[in-house]
Length: 313
Length: 291
Image (cartoon, rainbow over all chains, first blue to last red; front, side, top):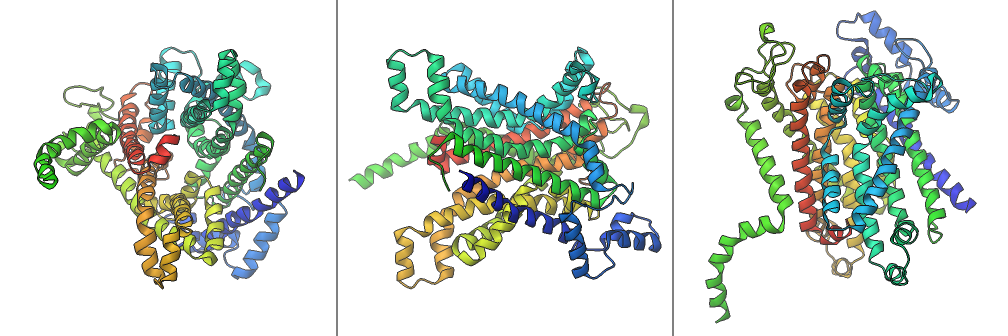
């Protein structure tokens, strides 16, 4: 087991190395003059030269690469062009709302999608199942930000049940914190929910067709016991996989959801950095988001070993 | 005799075949009809639009939907119906060209990776790295370094979509490669090029087509998201994402500025997804049974 975990851990290194090389070379080999584009439309030659010096683009490529790599390995992601703050500190400041939003979305989506998928599989081809599948198809097509505005319009503007926008940190009290996360979590989680519900249903259908389920039913076990203990447990591997794959949807969606709901997290930071063309910040955020995704995939891979002892690579 | 009977039976079957196809595959039918309507709307946008989509008329700002402005007006008094009709052009153009470019690139790389083991190790590591970056972020990073325009938006969406195609194609090539008929073709002295194009390529087409419809849907969503964030096509272009982004400020008093282009976007993505699901069921029955 330990050997498997260590091996999986080492396998993430080349992936992160490719991501780091990509952000490094993207700036250096971008067509045109990135320093001029970052400096803006009507920047003077001095301003462009200043940006170039700040990004280290005026030095030889090999030197740039060694400086950049050494700094990155020490956890230094450079300095923002606009605020002159270290990128790591900017990211650390904005981490909490994004983590809160991602976890609450994960909680809402998984908590709703798995029961929905189980019921759909249990009542396969009945009305409930068709409704669930219809919801799943719609959920894939619904852009998160459009749904966000529909939710805000009804729940916040018309019925005034929940706040329109904004984020309350948890230290301001539990209810304001939860309240500020309900609409963003639903808007962010809809596609994710559709995905998990669909896979849960498919995986459950496959398991429910097995002989041991018929045996369990025929020896008179209660339906809920059969569904949850016998079927769901054996249907878990694909469900866990898709929960992991779907984290990517959440990470992409965070950027948009935070913009709609005005949540001061990493997503807002990304959008602000892009609009100001603050490349060091964009670069740092890519590394953090990609790192989060790689880490989740690693955890999923490790969870397989626990869920299904037959899996060993 | 049998031949004659078959010939006689042919006309009625053909007459029936369209209805039969719709009955057997309602998702393909619904998806293609919706998509056809949207394509017609995009092509004939100047004819369908009731007003000039660019004309600013502050007197008519934020009018609700009415007989004169079917979908209302925005804060500059521009007609939302006409802008939405023109917006179909951007969405479809981005969706279709991303699907086409990503498929061509992905097919070439996927064939090469599946067939030539030496390229495989390097290219797949790069693909794994690209897949680790969320697609919107990757697109955003590319856009940060370029001047705004439709072309860079398409390029920026193609790059994160390519690895998805490469993986699908490569998996097919790997499974086909070990088939006895490929081994016998190699033993018979078939050249690499012919082996790839005549024996392997045709097998990859069905999964490629299915995957590219999903790429098309995802590209349209990413384009709208980028425009919404202000990092997509230039703001004066009437794309659905731009209309929604500009409607944000007055959304509470003029919800139609967001709901209507949003509904069009959702229906378009739905149409492409339905087409993709239908094609998947039709072309890859093994997968259909699993899902």
